[in-house]
Length: 393
Picture 1: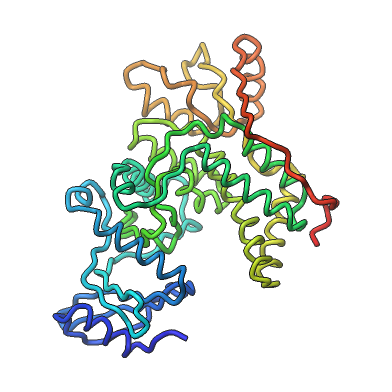
Picture 2: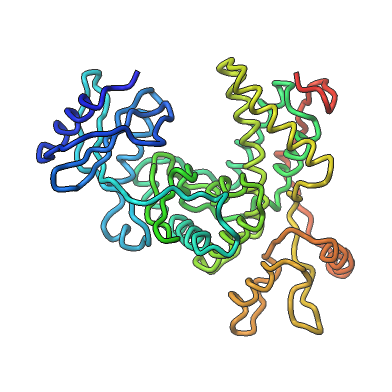
């Protein structure tokens, strides 16, 4: 049971003696089971957030977040177009748990379901993600936070998939789809960057269609930037994902040629991870929820509705029009962004979802310029349970 608002107000006063508290209210959307949180309003109108961990996991995340926030100097913060909260004060509760008071950040949580692909909010979001991914990795290293190479990420995901397969509750077709993707070395050729790690609608605030703040930095690490696009991919709308990715590329001046595929892969795997969690804590409601999502994915896969997870490339430039052979709006945008000097040096690094026309063009092109093959002796077969495609339990 969480602390009463009066107790939280008293703890906030203990952490920041100068607070002249007028009222306190529960923080909407903070019921994650990790923290007891509230908004403190002072007589001068200023507002603060108090967070007290409710579990060991919450305590660890709060410890990491405070370390991260302290490492973000004013110079670093000046490079960000959005706000990151500051620590106003700290104390301990009766159980010797860390209590932290933060500056309150204003804005409304982004609602991706309401956005169109041409929304300025998506452009601002892509730029904000680029700013995070462009942070100096030494900030993370100096805080003692995790660092994962591309090979580490693939290995960790494969280990998770092994555990998921052992439940016997995931359709075989999905397991094979994910295994094929994780064994595709060409998907994991990206340079690791600083990654927020907990991007979600509730953690990104916007004002007037611009990202105003990014919250909850307790999962910061060096790893796969596609992690921060997973929540967008989870909306199952590639136009939204493409729009954010284009804005991201415009800011970073580079292409991560398989970011879309990895974001979609991680989004699909999140349902399997939720199922695995349900089996570990023996919560049938979680198992049922995750199983239902996996049934939908399996049905869409059978109908050919899921996007390819393979690493594909634009076939070539159309000789007559000087544009990419594709019916995607992404192609034209990429040309406008990166070919301003008539150079197409980055052409073989660009990836989009293929249309049928693009696939045909690529097949013809590949006969003249065969793609290099990749060998990875770390890959292995997953021992799949003896279940039929339609058998979940």
